[in-house]
Image (cartoon, rainbow, N blue to C red; front, side, top):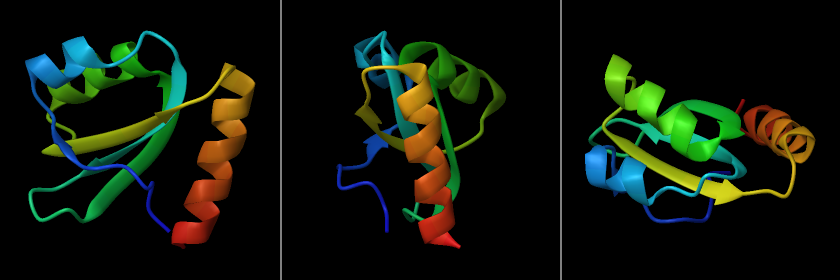
Length: 81
C-alpha cells in the first residue's frame, strides 16, 4: 500500500517546502509508479534525491523520531513486496 499522500513534483520548490524533520518518503516516476521507499530527515533526503535524479515525484509522511521513521519504512517496504 502506498503512502496516502498526494504526489508532488521532485523539484527545488518541493525540497524547500519539505519539513526538516524525520519521516518516510516514496520516490516515483512520472506515471506514479513507486521507485523507492526510504527514511531520514526529509529535506536532506530529498535534496540528495533531487541532485542524483532518483525520481520525478515524491510524497512523504513525518514521524517523531528517526527510529520510528526506520520502522515505518521497513513495514512499508514489506507491504509493497
